[in-house]
Image (cartoon, rainbow, N blue to C red; front, side, top):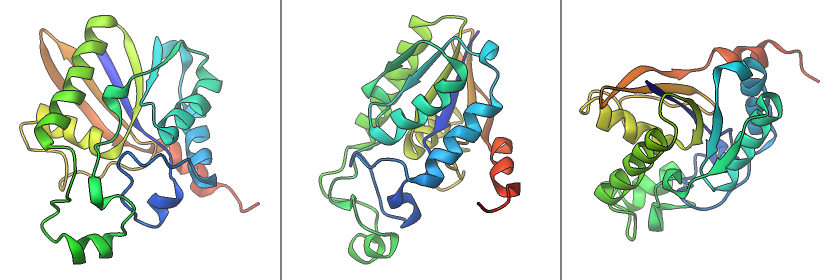
Length: 197
């Protein structure tokens, strides 16, 4: 059985401002770096074989911080980049609702193309690392779309919240993807209980 642990990247300034990022390459903010650090500190290196990341800066930075704890082989895969939201990128939620109330942003990546890209990536990971434990750092829409496809629409966009550096676990057994859990954030409680610096 191949198990993929999907980690959403840490927070960015645009996340905090509720701006749509898509493939705009925004780095982590200070909170995002702290989240990645808390995530890495909570993981056991013996539980994973490799760490894979989207090539976008916020995911790569998150993976690199986590990997200071795990010291795993590291690679990047463009298949797991965030969906391109075209003209919606850079807009706040209020601006998006005003301009595009139907959420159809001009020049955005078609949902079918996005779905094929990320599920092709999942199959590639499973074929390359059969029976392994893979930590994969990606993006909110990527993880939600995978959840939607695997659950036949019971989970995913509009139904599940995928928080920054949350962990979602999906396994491939006998040719079927199985959701083990999603949006696991226990490791972030350490940040909430820390006294202000």
